[in-house]
Length: 116
Image 1 (cartoon, rainbow, N blue to C red):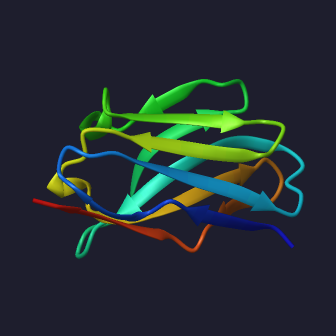
Image 2 (cartoon, rainbow, N blue to C red):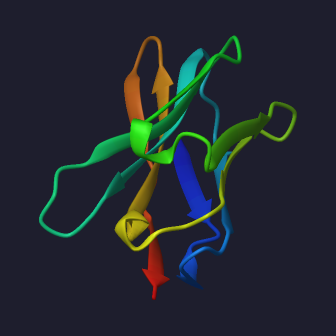
């Protein structure tokens, strides 16, 4: 049974930083990518950042230059370093992993709230 477990969310003032972590419990045999998505109230879930198995990264335009996705391959953990947080970054952040054979796995989500 594969589970993705996020941690690191919380309340932070605008301009502050947080680091999210996503650990994998169980075995995903062929990961094609790991990613972070977010969903704000009343809005659709959107891609924030993705890192492929080859290490290629891409980001939503709204977070470029502020957020960084990285990974620890040995520990099978993916991080999202968020700097310069803005009110509009407030959302539930979800960890995602894509297995080439079995498709998407999702974490339960972690709340990030940015206050003024």
